[in-house]
Image (cartoon, rainbow, N blue to C red; front, side, top):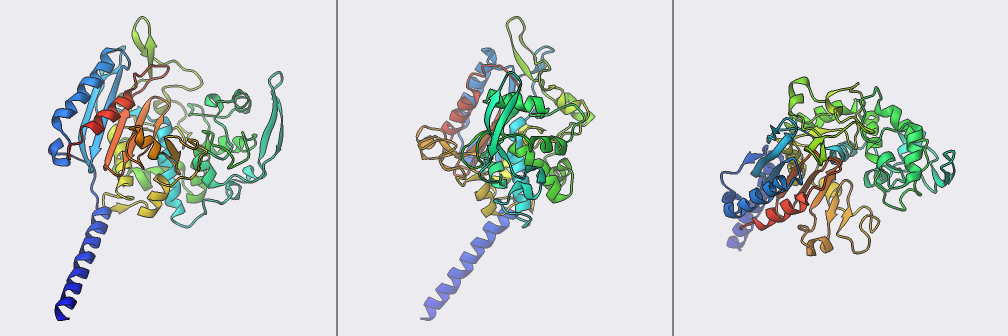
Length: 436
């Protein structure tokens, strides 16, 4: 009996010690470091050479003017290289610390900020957004639209738009110029909605209040449609926190995570590191993208007053990998906790849209901020079940795989370009390099 009690006490001490170690390691998780060797984290150096060959081939074949590729395993950088040109016209070489407009990769950061305030008990995910932004009260759904004079009819929505629906693109809101429905392109244009970002003297509150008056694609919660929901939530964050959105992200996320190169607007000292948006050209191969419904010089010029939660940030590959590593750590990094492990699971892993996003046998479902690989996607070689990802309008990509403890960030800056399947190629070559 005495031996049994001693064994029991010893077991409890070991279990408690292990639990304490797990807790301590998660809370004190350090910033990204460079692996001493690929083999130290279970990656084959020999197989990594295939990445160099494949990505260089994309440059040689004029599929891309340039890119920065980063791969992290177990919180350590295994691969971080630059290829090609940041500006083909001047032959300015790409560098690993160059800054890219990450567009819709901003959405994951905004979603994380929403969940940080959620943890403070300031709202429920199923609260109507009209509780905080009254202009959204009594939403209406589009019934008919006439192009000849841009008039339309509507009907009352069956329910209010919730915060959860804004996070999951099931609110019924549209996306203006990039919307798949020409009716909404016309409606948003006439209303003067800013879809991406702007160099004009506009503030997000003004934009969102105009947006709130417009009809919805469908009744809230009934479908999935990519939208300006995260722009609404950027303004929502200002209301809940009492801080300008850019200041909230800077003080609550970027500075504590040491994401020192992530901004809505770049300081003058860093503007030369911004990669040009480029497009293919039959004569010069690649040229700078012109001003269209947005100004490509957005992060370094203009009024600098518009903080788009859905598309406004610029960042580096390493900064964005740092953000993703915090999520893989269960919400902690640099000795600070940003989210609890359970909230990170809610944000990155749960299926919030049922079959609305991918269909009954789609490759992925949608969480509160990400596309998440399911069993069907896993069977097709898209990564582990639970791998979460998204991308950006200017051809930037990322994913994080909790099972393999891996992160991929691939930064490019193109529009109207063929691309050559760079994300899929880089992804396959990362997984084939695993050697443990």
